[in-house]
Figure (spheres, helix red, strand yellow):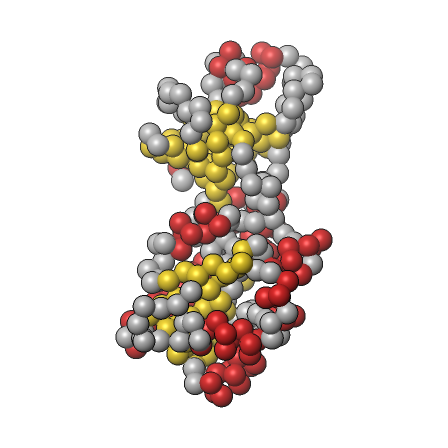
Length: 302
């Protein structure tokens, strides 16, 4: 890892799970400051999540996989995004060692921009005051970006995970600046949805560390190679059919095509209702029709 010329950089460092609006404020500040000083803009992030190495029992599920994070960061306008493999050895780095070996020797940092709750290095001891002291000695500035709020609370990856886990998709969207998304491969199902008049794409292949919303029925947008479509999603058990395993099934409205083997992105818009058993298949079909109608109304109004 290194730069192609001697220009210095304006840099930030962090996990950036979700790349939410608070992160975005830091990234835009970096871009503006780099342009003003004729420096390069760069971000340093980590995979896996540091807690998977330091305290695996407390490691959170991810809002964004590395692929998702890379695609979102590509829209930030930054020149460089550096992904470091987070190891037990790296976890033992004191803040000064990390700054010297990574930020100065490799990236030639001239200015470090961090969020208000930032901390890195061993035990997250690299807070703003520590970094300002190191910067004064080694010749770089340190700037702190304040919090961004959603739902009268400061946006953070932890808070957004909580909203997603509670099915509060509108708050998650406000915090992220975009809908919470899930990517999956379309796999063969039992064809029951088509038999009931609501063909579905059965989704699988999710990374085990990816955060799933709670079981329920959702209004969603489905993104396929053919375009963007309104949809309704079932996530979780299928109690009406005895012995049926849990599933994630996407019904795309006004769509007729074969998606088998294709990767589909699901953007969660609103939680509609919990999964409940029905006394008959006909009662289930009537509820599915009501779910699709309600989802369409939500999506057309969003």
